[in-house]
Length: 217
Image (cartoon, rainbow, N blue to C red; front, top):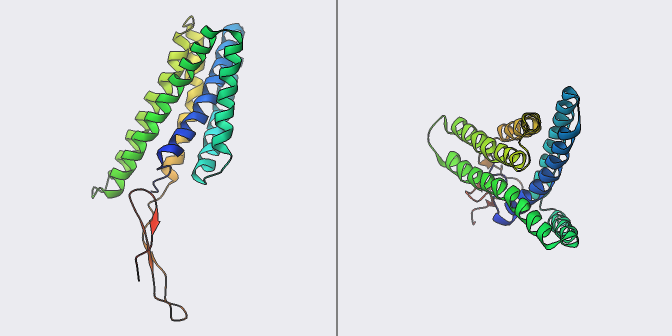
C-alpha cells in the first residue's frame, strides 16, 4: 500500500479538480434527466457520465501525484472563470456558484484527508486485516461524501425520483473506480540494493509522509 496523495496542497488541488468537473457533469445530467422522456436513455447517459468522471479522477490523481506544474494553475483559472461568468450574470448568481463549488469541494477534501489518515494507520498497524479495514472504511467515506453531493444537488432542485436515480447511477462508476484504484496500491516494502563497485548497500525507507529517505552513511 502506498500513501498516495499525502500533501495538503496536492489534496486540495485534487479535490478542487474533481469538485469542479463533478458539479458541471451533475448539472448536465440533472438537466437531461429533467427533460428526457426515455428513462433508459437517461440512465445510459448517467452511466457514461459516471465513467467520464472515473477517468477524470484517475487522470487528475496521476497528474497531482506526479507533481505536474500545470494542473494546479489550470484548475485555479477554470474556477476563476466560472466565478467571473457567474458574476457577469449577477452578484446573487456569483454567491450561488461559490456556494455550490465549496459544497462540492468540501466532501472531496474530507474524503481525501480521511483517506490519508486511514492509510497511515493501516501502514503502521500490526493487525493482519488492517488493509481490508482501511479499504472498507475508505469506500464508506467515499460513498457518503460523493453520494451525498449527488443527492444534495438533486434535492436543491425539484427532487424528482428520476433525477435521484440518475444521480446515483452517475456516482456508481466513479465510486467503483476509486475503490479499485485504492485496492491496486500495494504496500511498499524496504528493499536492499546489493553492493556494486565497492559501494555500500543502502535501503530506502518509506515514511509516514510518503517520502523516501536514505540512511546516512
